[in-house]
Length: 401
Image 1: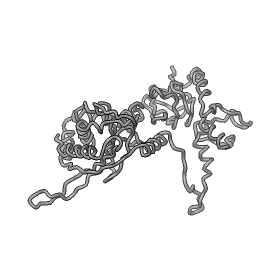
Image 2: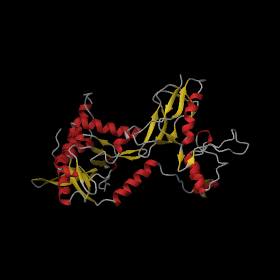
Image 3: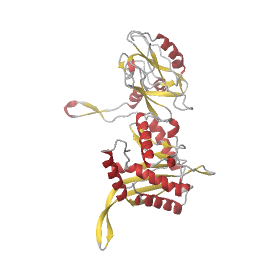
Image 4: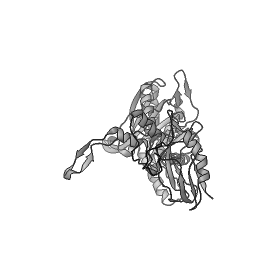
């Protein structure tokens, strides 16, 4: 029996999603767990896996289409099965999708087209009409020749050509529209810097005990299957939580006319994904032991990369404080941007060996990690912010495992 592929509902406020890429095409064999397509909401990007085995009998929407949630997107079944019943369910919703007033209809074209129709996504059609682009004879890059917004953008750009060796023409530059996720990141970062009084303090901490602890974890991993792979970042997040418990004013939201201070730490973790930066919140992180914290941090990071994170967890209001670690990239110092309305964010930098007086006229090199605390000066004064950062350092330098 054929199975409908339905556009999921990602959060209570999400009404439509935009298909960004199909990983399968009509007629392909599909197994449960295979990626079918990726899609975006106005908050994040996701990927949909198949829940059935069979053949992708039909696809009702193409790349770039804005699809209402809980509507049939495709159908999977056995070879020869009919998808007619599913098409009838999908068609009304498809025709009702609008993009700034432009209906997602298929326009009639002159004779010569195979089925006398132009397949064009609503976003592409609206852009073409707005920019006065003639798309009648355009060859779309989407499924079945469907014209996507990217095709209209390419026509708009009018990419000039330059000549390379042997007379082969190559594009002088490439241009593509911003994804929804990139637009959201850009908007949030710009608003953060415009609407707050951000200041960054830098400090460093001796990480000899952290490195010893990490080595112990690696040793145990080889002999104990139950050992959680606790990373340096997990340990630092643990230390940040302990410092937040001592300085709750940093565990707060600045709301213009009031400050909301939280009793529990809901830790935000900056995660780099192929779709862009995501900052999921780990709720009640202050209630967890180190192993549990490590496990849950890995879980939310993996969910972001797979596109399965709950939209509610990546709202800026979901976390009370954020940690952003660029140490793996060799960054020695940086100024992280606050995820408003949070009052602060900690940037974790790379480890550098520095010469230190070890006593008795002996000098040696000690590993230090850079810590960059950006805080909203409207919520926290410089003195308490410095003491909070110092507490993070002391938690790191006093860490034992």
